[in-house]
Length: 128
Image 1 (cartoon, helix red, strand yellow):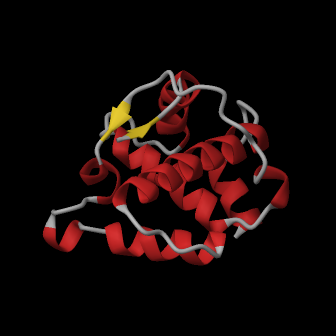
Image 2 (cartoon, rainbow, N blue to C red; image 1 turned 90 degrees about the horizontal axis):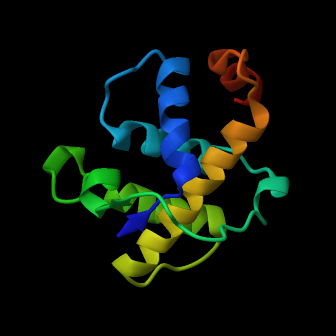
């Protein structure tokens, strides 16, 4: 299981409005946070610690599409995390833990970089 914090769950509503994607399943926003984390090599976000996961639990199939044929990105995320972190992931449980950390890291990057009146698309243009 991949767990979130209540902060992340609350941020999903703000992110959905910022992206103009209200009403989409939560995995869309969690995957967005994951992709933000894996796209930015910023050391100041690497040591963020999560005190406790008090949000919700998600299955691997919800986050990576595991078992969904052409929509299964599990291998992609597995490989991307191994390269990003310079590690070898040896189990699905290990993968879930790293996905969980990168979702939080992506949340932290977004929530600390964007103000409530910021344009998320301008942020993405500057960072990428």
